[in-house]
Image (cartoon, rainbow, N blue to C red):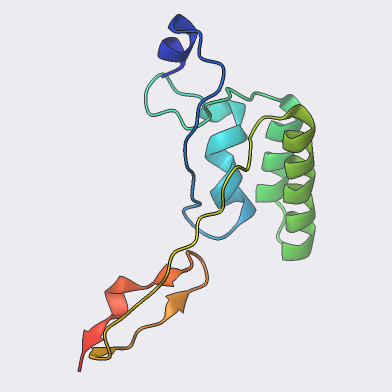
Length: 122
């Protein structure tokens, strides 16, 4: 992907991103860690390779206190905003409807949608 971006002189790339789990690392690791830049399957489209961000990501993974770890992720977010690395353009929402015949339906906080693995039928 980086080769294609450079060969075609792309300036802005629009995409969507959702974390694999609801945590700063799950959201940030693949989109701003310079060590995650890959020739194929790359998600760090801005090719952000800031030593400061990389060090903070490492520090966060070694921090066991959740509040302290979240402060580190907030620092990374601030650096990203200052550098205009990622444009948080849209937060999509969806109407969640279910038949009254569906049982065990609940919305998982992590993804804001039904946990389809738990659904049943009355």
